[in-house]
Length: 267
Image (tube, rainbow, N blue to C red; front, side, top):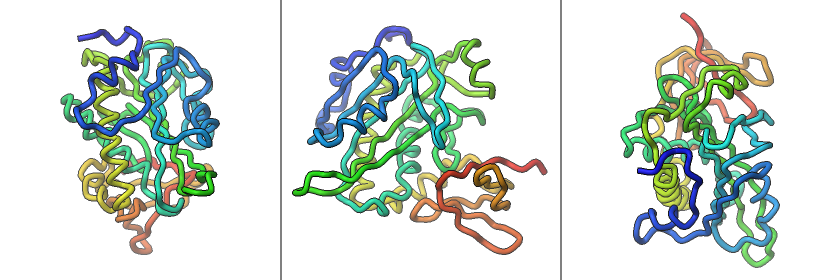
């Protein structure tokens, strides 16, 4: 098995994919600012899905403009441009569906993870992976639809110096001996199937699967909106469009993902 420090290989990733998997372009670069930004800038010229992976991102982004800190070999960072023939509002729940696909892929490598609403993957309670999705309307007059650029960062082996920069506990896959090409090929296969399914059926096809992986099921949580608590209650799960259901003192409420964050409440 290849070590984690060997460079990613687009050719090897393609060769490790399942026979019959959806064809798409695979690109690997040594360094860039942001793979999401790179693909967003190219959308008007794309005719089919493209995966762009980078060994190093100097301007990687998370939700709400947060920085994604990494160093070469410490993480698997990539973006996938995928076109949906659905209106923008029909893409609600897409980050959660992507989380399901990531979790199910990792489970095939005997890596147990849970999902934190709306877009984090946790291992042993700490963040292992994050998802950032940005969208743009297809501008070619004859086809329309919406392009989604799905950015994913998975911690592979976080050195102590990087952990200090991040400033909060994080999880990684150190000790697993993960072949990054093999992992990325498997993720690409499962994401392709999941995105095709989402295109046909929306998030309803993923809701039960997400709820089985729910990290905070039955726990007291607080929802923060721009730094202030907007809701507090017991997390039930998600509904068919990806809204988080909370049992509050005023009854059940459904929270739509946006620039909000979730934290557990100490009992």
